[in-house]
Length: 143
Image (tube, rainbow, N blue to C red; front, side):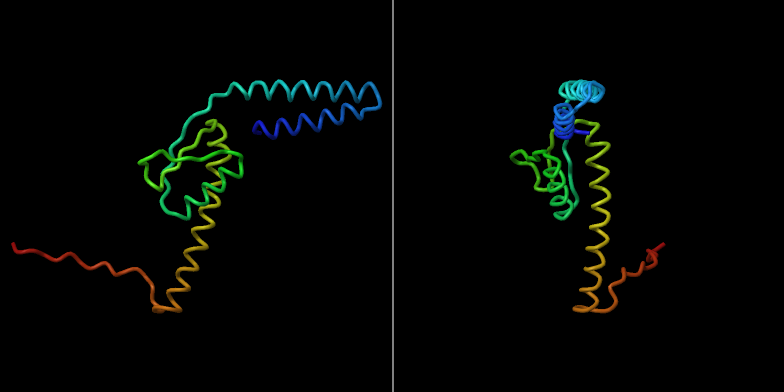
């Protein structure tokens, strides 16, 4: 859970607390607010790491940029870095447990779709056989 989600959860608990009608409801909401506030405070001290991602193609790069922005991150690139390079500041846990697994899953799906579309277009517009080239036997040189 990232900081924005924790803040939103804290807001919801606060609204429960203000709307509580019994002392037991107020006590439960107060304890929940305390737990979330503690977790939020701990997360503020988590070390942010700078990552460098080198993405294979423009489709992967565009997908990765969209995914980082969806999570409220700001990807960047330094001068003289390759167009396929994306820099990002994030916590290692977020990258390892959320961002990268989502990217891999979405990228695999996108690659499969683009491959199917490419094969279909080539078969219709160029030639029906778009299979790989045959492997020729090695030529024997002079002995």
